[in-house]
Length: 212
Image (cartoon, rainbow, N blue to C red; front, top):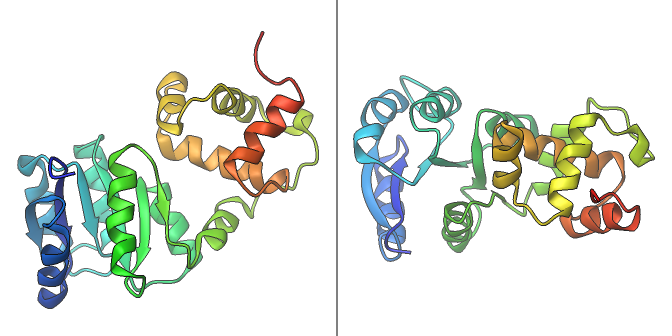
C-alpha cells in the first residue's frame, strides 16, 4: 500500500525513527512531528491518508490534536499509538474520531495491520484491550433484551449493517460521523449480548429486520 500517505507524531525521537523505518517499507511517510501543535499546524499541507499519533505529547495532547485534525481533514484516519491501557481514554479516542487504537507494547506487525485496515475504511482496536473499549463505549446504557427496545437510530444503523453496508457507508447515508455509527453498533452488541459483527447481522436477519 505504497500509495497510502502516513504522518507519524511522537515526542520521542527514537520512537519516531523506529516507526519511520518500520512503516516506510509499505507506506509513504510524508511527515513526522514531535508535538501535537506542530502536527495540527503542519498536517493539512501534507495531505495524509492516515495519521499515527501518540496521546501524551507536549504543547497539545494527542486527543485534542486528533479532534482538531478531524475538523481540518474530515477524511483522514487517526490511529492512536500509546502506552495508555485506560479503556476510558481509548473510548475517548474513538469519540474524537479515531479509526484505530494500538498499544506500544503490541507487536510491530499490529500497527502495520491497523494502518492497512483503516486505510481501507475499517477500524482497528488492539486485541490486548478491544473488549474493554467496547465495554467503556456502552457501559452507561441500560442492557436491552429485545430488538423492540432499540432506539430508532439504532434500528436504522442495524438495518444498514444487515444490508451489508460498511460503517462508513451507513454514516454517509444517515448523515452522521462513522464514530457515531460505531458507537450505536457496539452499544447494540453490548445490549443484545452479541460478541461479533457477524452475529449482529445474523440477529437482524433472523428477526426479518431487513426492510421490504
